[in-house]
Length: 100
Image (cartoon, rainbow, N blue to C red; front, side, top):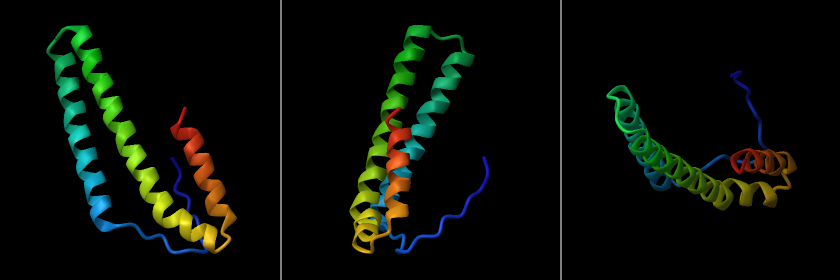
C-alpha cells in the first residue's frame, strides 16, 4: 500500500476521547481475532470459529461506524463550511468502500 499525502484546506481535528475509545475498541477486536486464530490452530469446531469471525466482523464494522461519525461531526462539517469539496469527495469514496 503506497503512502499518499492529502492536503486539506481544513484542519483535521478529532475529539481525543472519542479517538481513544475507538483505539481501545480496535485493540479488543485484535485480541478477539487472535483468539479466533488460536481456535483454528487448536482445531476447534468450524461452526464455532465462524460464529467468532462474525463477531469480529461486527466489532470492526462498529469501529468503522464510530470513525465515520467522528469524522462527519468534525472534519466534514469544517470541510463543508470551508467549501473543501475534495475532502467531501474523498469521504464519499471512503464510505462507498466501507459499505461494500
